Amino acid sequence: MPALTPTLVQIHHASDVLVVGGGLAGIVTALEALRAGQRVTLVDRDTPERLGGLALWAFGGMALVGTPLQARMKIPDTPEVALRDWLRFGELDPADAHAVQWARHYVEHSRARVYDWLIGQGVRFMPAVNWVERGRHGDGNSLPRYHVVWGTARALTRRLITLMREADTGGHLTVLHRHRVTALDHQGGRVCGASGVDEATGREVRLSAPVVVLAMGGINGSHEQVRAHWPRQRPLPAAMLNGAHPYADGRLHHHAASALGAQITHAGEMWNYAAGFPHPFPQFEGHGLSAIPCKSALWLDHRGVRIGPEPLVTGFDTHWLCQRVAAQPKPWTWHLLNWRIAAREFAISGAEHNPRIRDRQFPAFLKETLLGNHRLVRQMQRECRDFLVDDTLAGLAARMNALTASHDVDPAVLQATADAFDANFANGRQLHNDDQIRRILHARQWGPDRLRTCAPAPLQRRGAGPYIAIRMQLITRKSLGGLQTDLDSRVLDAHGQPIAGLYGVGEAAGFGGGGANGKRSLEGTFLPGCILTARAAARSFAGAR
Image: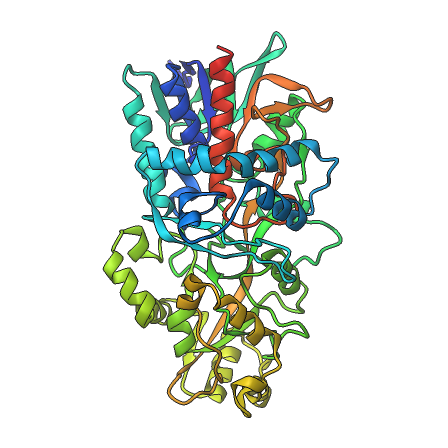
């Protein structure tokens, strides 16, 4: 008798709300829905310990407006000032009504619905407000707004996961790990659930719910998607690192949601970083780390020549930096610095390489801030092949060429680059004429930046060595575009009408409206954008129940 072929049984789950994606936006949506008494199914592609998505690994910076921390530091911020900065820096089109509405919603409600709400959930912030993305011409953040979660976004995410579990008082929460949604179900003019697969077993899964919330992130984890949507008028580098996640591949945007008429806007707008390098212990192909570039480092092209005429300096316009780096002849640039600069200024974005903040070790954090983070510099020297150290510039040039298997860097050219910069100090500190030095001096006027930025000095200053060169590449990060949504986070069709039962939150919705940040972010708008869009969705469908 022939053997019977086993049939994969379809598993069925029914709930009031189906949340697709277990990142910060999905977790906040589930938490608020549970607190409203609704049954929730949360579907996530990753493993249980990775619930939380990229937020679990993020640094935890948030652009917030009118907070008590700002008042304590005498920062006179208001929603009106913040909106002016946002619209100007992001270059938002006034006709893009949904994006502009979400920008206004953000600045008006980030204090109450993010800062105050998180404080009420037991989340704390570091006592200083930082000043990022000032704009090359003062057209970015006109005031410091960057608040850092004490414990990084990892502590924030784990706290909200705990609260989500605690809100499940009656068995109303089902979390499905290693599950992938493949299609949205639609019946009687509205969404009624989704179909998917258990990737661990291959079994088909039917997920029925009158409300479906798309919280699956953006498209920047797929280089294919990034390249397909890269604006034609902007330079595209030959190679990039991945700072997102391979699961953020745009499939649900372009297939499942689009099939129901959902509109995807600003797909070519992205928040990438100009200074990435390969993760020493990658978790997926092309996995990169995003450095927080040292303001005092000289940013060089592949030959060891300083990029100019306007020098590249971090902290002013990341969008512009990415375009300058992408336009270089080769897909990498160099940061040239010394140990003195690295110990004071070098940092890597994210929870992984900020253990003093992540693990809430305030005395150790204060010590490293005041005396220099030699621990991190030594760690990168030991672990990262793109982080080169040598006692001489000639020796450093040889290491740079060995890494790239080339003769691109002429030792004499590298020496001349350093000499030209150091010449600014030959006649005293008062007679320099270099835009990078001017920007550093401006940054140091703000106390928190002064602690993390070296006083300008010659690169070849005695006792400041050894020399360091870091090979940097453009690294993808976040999507600024996404599903177009209204202020209730309802996904809209081509006529601007809500698709019944379908919501989009977080990065999947371009952090609100399909592109609330425009072309540039004021930085730190992403975690709060996840929270604001998720809470708006929950208010909408809980109130309509």
